Image (tube, rainbow, N blue to C red; front, side, top):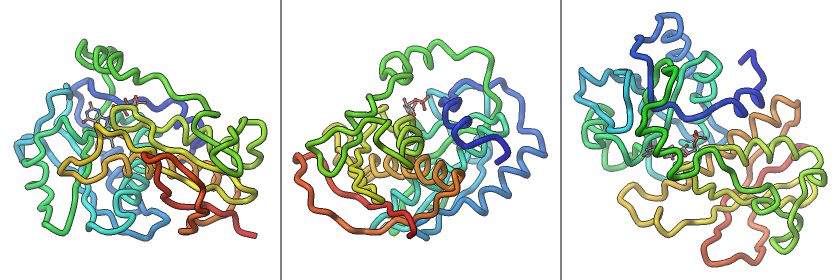
Length: 273
Ligand SMILES: Cc1cc2nc3c(=O)[nH]c(=O)nc-3n(C[C@H](O)[C@H](O)[C@H](O)COP(=O)(O)O)c2cc1C
């Protein structure tokens, strides 16, 4: 990516209203090439396909002005949704750097048609698909109303998401050291219903990530869609650190902090010594 990841993250917004122009062949080629490299730090393969809505009978009630979609699937397993969210977001940020709009759709898609087009097996899951195309100048009325309804432009404050040494102490951005920008970029991540389920506790050179589960988002047939949100936030966090030249890795190392019933440990990032 030529533009900085932080710039792309700051400018990115979901796009549901497209201008009707088909993808330029050079953009399509770049997207196809990128999809082959959209890996994740969990080394879980994600299979992407670009799909034509007319060919496969795909639709979404919230999308106007494009027939092109990207969908992806992953084998079910520990960390699969997190890996999925990471790789899918990496793709969405790359698309944004080309001026191509995306929006992850979990609920508002003709799911069975998408799953058929993706040949999703019982051992696999296809959490989201996204339209791809060029944003229209104006959002549709429906899109504007949706954004207003879920307060899509708002994000929770830094110090209600991120903590220091335990959940008892809130973290100020200025005290977050090398993690300040990366956590701020995680804060700006998109999420299903804009619920922003990511939480983190910084302890020295480690950041422990947690999922704060919203009741309305659990127990659906898709599994835990909020784990995809966590993967997205981890992508923003990790790509920002990588761009700043900080090396690190994700490990499972639950520090055992006391949490409320809705909050569960996910993964820890640690910088390389
Ligand atoms: C995992 C996931 C699932 C989503 N599912 C839907 C969906 O079914 N329909 C929809 O219109 N938007 C969906 N969204 C988009 C969110 O509503 C959007 O990202 C959020 O409101 C924040 O807005 P922004 O992306 O413009 O920052 C989804 C987003 C994510 C990350």
